[in-house]
Length: 414
Image (spheres, rainbow, N blue to C red):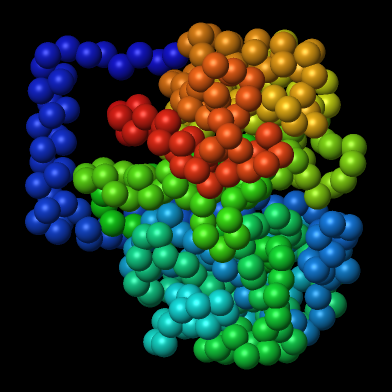
């Protein structure tokens, strides 16, 4: 673990800086955007577009023809300008985007009057996404409040072939026939259970937002078992805590993927995504403004009987690569799974060994003990009933809040 040098003079400097930052926030100077202060306000890790039997309403596997997707995204930070990242990461051929817009959500697929903006790419309304590539829109002037929701609409003439997606969202999205990107209402849109065609929203943030923390994980970070359309994932709760604090803060990007593993691809479906070790560059290091990472992943590896030593070796590689980029990385202990379908004596032993290493190895820049925050006091292997979604594996809304509350903001913002 990297240790900050602490001395009386250093402490005095920190306190003075904190006082100055607080005064600046009160005076309003900290609320002004800096020209170069772009951060990731929302992110969704992409996966290959395939048909998912238990998520049949998502057309990613068959693709789109003459359709508009209206994605709904809860942003962790606000600002005065916005730019959108379109994705064709897993596309097998180039794809033309005919029209794209961004707006503030009123409700469902309806737009707040006066907020709809057409996007351009190098000054042009249309853009072609290369197979395996993405496109970043030109900045558009739009006042966005932290913890608000944006609608990002993308029209594709098609046929596109399979479309890069994020399959499990806990968020209702929308789709319509034809070019409905500029529609101010939800008329003609129907429900869509996945995010399509986008994987990032960036804002030019106020000066007090000094960067982005990326939450790297699996379904417990992604969406699973939280209330739909309520933004109750633990990274959302962390964003609320960060936004509420005075002075310097961070935006939050969610790099969680349901079913994802650290070490190996899942053998039971490509829609679980490539393993964490194979998506660091795209989902973490390339995120605009990234300063730090919180790693909470490994339960699915344990569920496929990975051993503690190999999982720890995977963590060490993630730590090494993150530090090589000059970023901080914080380890979160794996939450309990006693009584779930994952639970066996051998897997409990692996879980215990892995969490003990996270707590004591001193290889992370800090540790957030999510396991202790969510477990029954007398049974560390089992989720507290008040935090159990019902499957004894995934924390519910209250459990996610407990996890977010276990993040030491003073460590996260040294």
